Image (cartoon, rainbow, N blue to C red; front, side):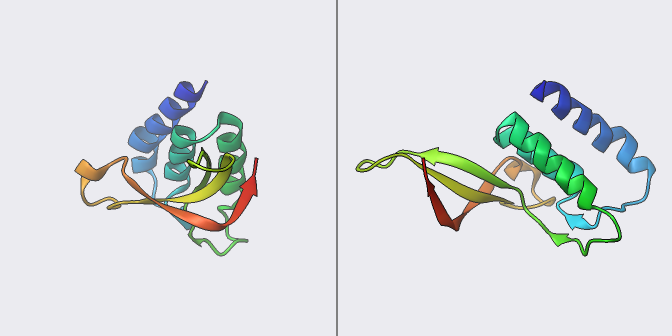
Length: 114
């Protein structure tokens, strides 16, 4: 299912999106946001937050920069596993395609115990 949705987003970006003028109020665009979420997080989480983002992409909301937030479980050498939320920020957005798929992981300050 994840692969199907990623394929549908890719078709939208390559075929449908170039035919219309850019209207997304956010950076990265809603389709890019959804693509990153489906590639790097849980399917249901990605679906929920992608739909939430698409519903917010209208004239009633301000828009702006809104990078996806993903949760990663880490296991430190000493201690219990932790669930850490990080922002996915592209290493070099839209300029250097050799860096595609490389992101800075910026940790939020709130740590949730598992």
